[in-house]
Length: 277
Image (cartoon, rainbow, N blue to C red; front, side, top):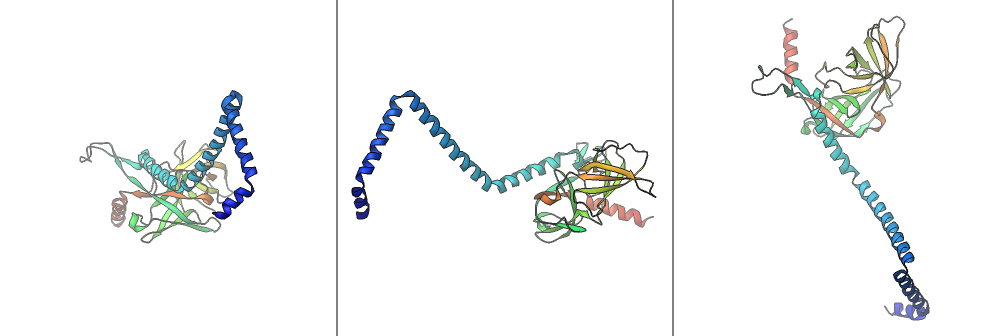
């Protein structure tokens, strides 16, 4: 404290000068409209800049919470799409006074590991058996199909990516419902191939490809991509389509795991049908 007083005494002329300048500045601002307006505008501009920086910092650290909220909202929207409901006859399902019964529900998950460089690619999610995830469940995002759950532990799950040589997904051309099969030939992580489209089908570049709904894994009309090119390859009797994916597999963060509520019932029925043939 003594050193502080000694410092002030040694430089009191300077501090006195600063004090007088501040008083003069205040008097000018108070008694002149133009200067007062300039000062107020400058103060507002500086304060606004400070608030903007503060807001940007706050928003940055809140991104995780925002992403989780968006994921929850996406989950709710997914559960409301028509493909998540099974159209039934109310004369049969007498316990429900409705024409539609939910068939699919969705579980939010975060991608904690991902690969797009290999011939057979996998993802790892931060949800597992304790969260309701089971093998053979589909995985999607708002942009399209991601893959199918392969293995599950208590808290994590491994997903076979759409970018996998053994992946096959039933799909259709949205505008005319012609069915085909989606595979990945292992060359380009932004593109897959669609097979078995008859040569009489009218195709155009830009046509949308979606899931067919003819499986227990994905609801109908989940986006996959658009036709980039098509041809009948030599020795083949069908069109082969190059499909440009909607999903950027190199930038996956949050996904939804698809749960088919009737999966066990459908599986048991199909097993019974096969044993009786």
